Image 1: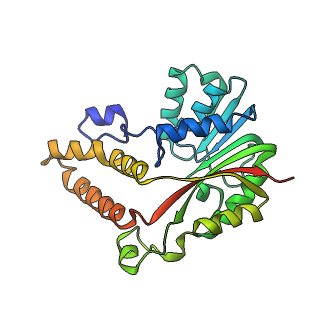
Image 2: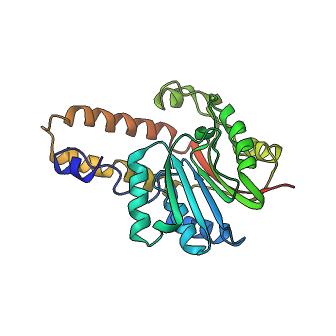
Length: 257
Protein backbone atom coordinates (compact mmCIF):
# COMPACT_ATOMS: atom_id res chain seq x y z
CA UNK A 1 0.00 0.00 0.00
CA UNK A 2 1.49 3.36 -0.99
CA UNK A 3 1.13 6.72 0.74
CA UNK A 4 -1.27 7.74 -2.03
CA UNK A 5 -3.46 4.70 -1.36
CA UNK A 6 -3.59 5.58 2.34
CA UNK A 7 -4.51 9.17 1.54
CA UNK A 8 -7.41 7.84 -0.52
CA UNK A 9 -8.80 5.97 2.47
CA UNK A 10 -7.13 2.57 2.21
CA UNK A 11 -5.46 0.94 5.23
CA UNK A 12 -1.74 1.72 5.64
CA UNK A 13 0.75 -1.12 5.18
CA UNK A 14 3.62 -2.21 7.44
CA UNK A 15 4.79 1.26 8.46
CA UNK A 16 5.50 0.02 12.03
CA UNK A 17 7.86 -2.71 10.85
CA UNK A 18 11.60 -2.09 10.69
CA UNK A 19 12.36 -5.71 9.78
CA UNK A 20 9.91 -8.06 8.10
CA UNK A 21 10.41 -10.71 10.76
CA UNK A 22 10.99 -11.25 14.49
CA UNK A 23 14.29 -9.39 14.77
CA UNK A 24 15.13 -6.94 17.54
CA UNK A 25 17.43 -3.96 17.22
CA UNK A 26 19.86 -5.61 19.64
CA UNK A 27 20.04 -8.84 17.65
CA UNK A 28 20.27 -6.95 14.35
CA UNK A 29 23.20 -4.90 15.62
CA UNK A 30 24.99 -8.03 16.82
CA UNK A 31 24.38 -9.77 13.50
CA UNK A 32 25.74 -6.83 11.53
CA UNK A 33 28.89 -6.71 13.67
CA UNK A 34 29.46 -10.44 13.24
CA UNK A 35 28.74 -10.52 9.53
CA UNK A 36 31.05 -7.62 8.71
CA UNK A 37 34.10 -8.96 10.58
CA UNK A 38 35.28 -10.70 7.42
CA UNK A 39 35.13 -7.38 5.50
CA UNK A 40 32.72 -8.45 2.75
CA UNK A 41 32.85 -6.48 -0.49
CA UNK A 42 29.78 -8.06 -2.09
CA UNK A 43 26.43 -8.70 -0.42
CA UNK A 44 23.51 -10.64 -1.89
CA UNK A 45 20.11 -10.52 -0.18
CA UNK A 46 17.67 -13.24 -1.26
CA UNK A 47 14.00 -12.38 -0.79
CA UNK A 48 15.20 -9.02 0.48
CA UNK A 49 11.89 -7.18 0.89
CA UNK A 50 13.01 -3.63 1.62
CA UNK A 51 16.48 -4.87 2.54
CA UNK A 52 16.83 -3.26 5.98
CA UNK A 53 19.49 -5.68 7.24
CA UNK A 54 21.44 -5.44 3.98
CA UNK A 55 21.44 -1.64 4.18
CA UNK A 56 22.78 -1.80 7.74
CA UNK A 57 25.54 -4.16 6.61
CA UNK A 58 26.49 -1.77 3.81
CA UNK A 59 26.60 1.14 6.23
CA UNK A 60 29.02 -0.83 8.43
CA UNK A 61 31.09 -2.12 5.47
CA UNK A 62 31.88 0.99 3.40
CA UNK A 63 33.73 -0.93 0.67
CA UNK A 64 30.82 -3.28 0.00
CA UNK A 65 28.13 -3.21 -2.66
CA UNK A 66 24.83 -5.04 -2.42
CA UNK A 67 22.13 -6.61 -4.56
CA UNK A 68 18.68 -7.39 -3.18
CA UNK A 69 16.33 -9.74 -5.03
CA UNK A 70 12.59 -9.93 -4.47
CA UNK A 71 9.37 -10.26 -6.45
CA UNK A 72 7.45 -7.56 -4.54
CA UNK A 73 7.84 -4.25 -6.35
CA UNK A 74 6.36 -2.22 -3.49
CA UNK A 75 8.88 -3.52 -0.96
CA UNK A 76 11.75 -2.96 -3.38
CA UNK A 77 10.63 0.64 -3.88
CA UNK A 78 10.69 1.14 -0.11
CA UNK A 79 14.23 -0.25 -0.06
CA UNK A 80 15.35 2.15 -2.78
CA UNK A 81 13.87 5.09 -0.87
CA UNK A 82 15.63 4.02 2.32
CA UNK A 83 18.93 3.57 0.48
CA UNK A 84 18.64 7.04 -1.02
CA UNK A 85 17.86 8.59 2.36
CA UNK A 86 20.94 6.96 3.91
CA UNK A 87 23.35 7.84 1.10
CA UNK A 88 23.67 4.21 0.01
CA UNK A 89 21.89 4.35 -3.35
CA UNK A 90 25.12 4.19 -5.34
CA UNK A 91 26.18 0.97 -3.59
CA UNK A 92 23.00 -1.09 -3.74
CA UNK A 93 20.64 -2.42 -6.39
CA UNK A 94 17.14 -3.75 -5.77
CA UNK A 95 16.11 -6.23 -8.47
CA UNK A 96 12.57 -7.44 -9.12
CA UNK A 97 12.96 -11.08 -10.15
CA UNK A 98 12.77 -14.65 -8.91
CA UNK A 99 15.79 -15.94 -7.01
CA UNK A 100 15.46 -19.47 -8.39
CA UNK A 101 18.57 -20.14 -10.47
CA UNK A 102 19.72 -16.55 -9.98
CA UNK A 103 22.72 -15.40 -11.99
CA UNK A 104 23.77 -13.04 -9.20
CA UNK A 105 26.60 -14.17 -6.97
CA UNK A 106 28.72 -15.65 -5.66
CA UNK A 107 28.94 -13.01 -2.94
CA UNK A 108 31.06 -12.63 0.17
CA UNK A 109 27.92 -12.37 2.29
CA UNK A 110 24.57 -13.90 1.43
CA UNK A 111 21.48 -13.01 3.43
CA UNK A 112 18.43 -15.26 3.25
CA UNK A 113 16.13 -14.40 6.13
CA UNK A 114 12.71 -16.03 6.07
CA UNK A 115 13.07 -16.50 2.34
CA UNK A 116 14.50 -19.95 1.62
CA UNK A 117 11.33 -20.76 -0.33
CA UNK A 118 12.47 -18.13 -2.86
CA UNK A 119 15.35 -20.41 -3.90
CA UNK A 120 13.31 -23.52 -4.67
CA UNK A 121 10.05 -24.61 -6.26
CA UNK A 122 9.85 -27.64 -3.94
CA UNK A 123 7.15 -28.06 -1.31
CA UNK A 124 7.93 -27.63 2.39
CA UNK A 125 10.08 -28.74 4.01
CA UNK A 126 12.11 -29.96 1.02
CA UNK A 127 12.71 -26.41 -0.18
CA UNK A 128 14.96 -25.86 2.85
CA UNK A 129 17.38 -28.55 1.67
CA UNK A 130 17.42 -27.18 -1.87
CA UNK A 131 17.87 -23.64 -0.59
CA UNK A 132 20.89 -24.62 1.48
CA UNK A 133 22.51 -26.21 -1.56
CA UNK A 134 21.81 -23.06 -3.57
CA UNK A 135 23.24 -20.87 -0.84
CA UNK A 136 26.46 -22.89 -0.83
CA UNK A 137 26.83 -22.08 -4.55
CA UNK A 138 26.04 -18.43 -4.00
CA UNK A 139 28.65 -17.72 -1.32
CA UNK A 140 32.36 -17.30 -1.90
CA UNK A 141 34.90 -19.44 -0.07
CA UNK A 142 35.70 -17.62 3.14
CA UNK A 143 32.37 -15.81 3.02
CA UNK A 144 29.33 -16.07 5.24
CA UNK A 145 25.65 -16.93 4.89
CA UNK A 146 22.98 -15.70 7.26
CA UNK A 147 20.02 -18.06 7.06
CA UNK A 148 16.84 -17.14 8.89
CA UNK A 149 14.70 -20.28 8.85
CA UNK A 150 11.54 -21.44 10.56
CA UNK A 151 11.59 -24.54 12.74
CA UNK A 152 9.27 -26.28 15.15
CA UNK A 153 10.15 -25.57 18.76
CA UNK A 154 8.05 -28.62 19.57
CA UNK A 155 5.75 -30.85 17.57
CA UNK A 156 2.47 -28.96 17.08
CA UNK A 157 -0.78 -30.58 18.12
CA UNK A 158 -3.57 -31.27 15.66
CA UNK A 159 -5.62 -28.46 17.21
CA UNK A 160 -2.74 -26.00 16.82
CA UNK A 161 -2.15 -27.01 13.21
CA UNK A 162 -5.82 -26.55 12.39
CA UNK A 163 -5.55 -22.91 13.47
CA UNK A 164 -2.39 -22.08 11.51
CA UNK A 165 -2.04 -21.35 7.79
CA UNK A 166 -4.23 -23.36 5.39
CA UNK A 167 -3.00 -26.93 5.06
CA UNK A 168 -0.49 -26.60 7.90
CA UNK A 169 1.17 -29.92 8.73
CA UNK A 170 3.70 -31.16 11.24
CA UNK A 171 5.98 -31.92 8.29
CA UNK A 172 6.12 -28.26 7.16
CA UNK A 173 9.24 -27.57 9.24
CA UNK A 174 12.16 -29.42 10.77
CA UNK A 175 13.29 -29.10 14.33
CA UNK A 176 16.40 -27.04 15.09
CA UNK A 177 18.78 -30.00 15.36
CA UNK A 178 17.69 -31.32 11.97
CA UNK A 179 18.01 -27.88 10.42
CA UNK A 180 21.61 -27.65 11.61
CA UNK A 181 22.36 -31.15 10.30
CA UNK A 182 21.00 -30.14 6.90
CA UNK A 183 23.24 -27.07 6.85
CA UNK A 184 26.29 -29.23 7.57
CA UNK A 185 25.26 -31.73 4.88
CA UNK A 186 24.99 -28.87 2.37
CA UNK A 187 28.62 -27.88 2.96
CA UNK A 188 28.51 -25.44 5.87
CA UNK A 189 29.76 -25.24 9.42
CA UNK A 190 27.55 -23.30 11.84
CA UNK A 191 29.53 -20.40 13.27
CA UNK A 192 26.64 -19.12 15.34
CA UNK A 193 23.18 -20.43 16.22
CA UNK A 194 20.52 -18.21 17.75
CA UNK A 195 16.74 -18.11 17.76
CA UNK A 196 14.14 -15.36 17.94
CA UNK A 197 12.68 -14.97 21.40
CA UNK A 198 9.06 -14.40 22.38
CA UNK A 199 9.53 -10.64 22.74
CA UNK A 200 10.79 -10.44 19.16
CA UNK A 201 7.86 -12.48 17.87
CA UNK A 202 5.36 -10.33 19.75
CA UNK A 203 6.90 -7.10 18.53
CA UNK A 204 6.86 -8.39 14.96
CA UNK A 205 3.32 -9.70 14.96
CA UNK A 206 1.94 -6.65 16.76
CA UNK A 207 3.75 -4.27 14.41
CA UNK A 208 2.54 -6.29 11.43
CA UNK A 209 -1.08 -5.62 12.37
CA UNK A 210 -0.99 -2.36 14.32
CA UNK A 211 -1.45 0.17 11.51
CA UNK A 212 -4.44 -1.63 10.09
CA UNK A 213 -5.97 -2.33 13.51
CA UNK A 214 -5.95 1.41 14.27
CA UNK A 215 -7.34 2.21 10.83
CA UNK A 216 -10.16 -0.31 11.30
CA UNK A 217 -11.05 1.06 14.74
CA UNK A 218 -11.31 4.53 13.22
CA UNK A 219 -13.16 3.46 10.02
CA UNK A 220 -15.67 0.77 11.05
CA UNK A 221 -18.09 1.72 8.26
CA UNK A 222 -15.54 1.99 5.45
CA UNK A 223 -16.32 -0.12 2.35
CA UNK A 224 -13.14 -2.13 3.06
CA UNK A 225 -13.86 -2.57 6.78
CA UNK A 226 -15.54 -5.98 6.62
CA UNK A 227 -12.84 -7.70 4.56
CA UNK A 228 -10.11 -5.97 6.58
CA UNK A 229 -11.66 -7.15 9.86
CA UNK A 230 -11.88 -10.72 8.58
CA UNK A 231 -8.24 -10.66 7.46
CA UNK A 232 -7.00 -9.22 10.76
CA UNK A 233 -9.00 -11.65 12.87
CA UNK A 234 -7.82 -14.59 10.77
CA UNK A 235 -4.18 -13.60 11.06
CA UNK A 236 -4.45 -13.05 14.80
CA UNK A 237 -5.99 -16.49 15.26
CA UNK A 238 -3.17 -18.03 13.22
CA UNK A 239 -0.57 -16.22 15.31
CA UNK A 240 -2.16 -17.45 18.53
CA UNK A 241 -2.00 -21.00 17.12
CA UNK A 242 1.74 -20.92 16.30
CA UNK A 243 2.82 -18.63 19.14
CA UNK A 244 5.46 -20.53 21.12
CA UNK A 245 5.39 -23.41 18.63
CA UNK A 246 6.96 -21.97 15.48
CA UNK A 247 10.49 -20.65 15.93
CA UNK A 248 12.88 -18.75 13.71
CA UNK A 249 16.57 -19.64 13.74
CA UNK A 250 19.28 -17.22 12.70
CA UNK A 251 22.21 -19.35 11.53
CA UNK A 252 25.53 -17.78 10.63
CA UNK A 253 27.07 -20.34 8.29
CA UNK A 254 30.67 -20.72 7.11
CA UNK A 255 31.22 -22.55 3.80
CA UNK A 256 33.41 -25.62 4.31
CA UNK A 257 36.24 -25.95 1.79
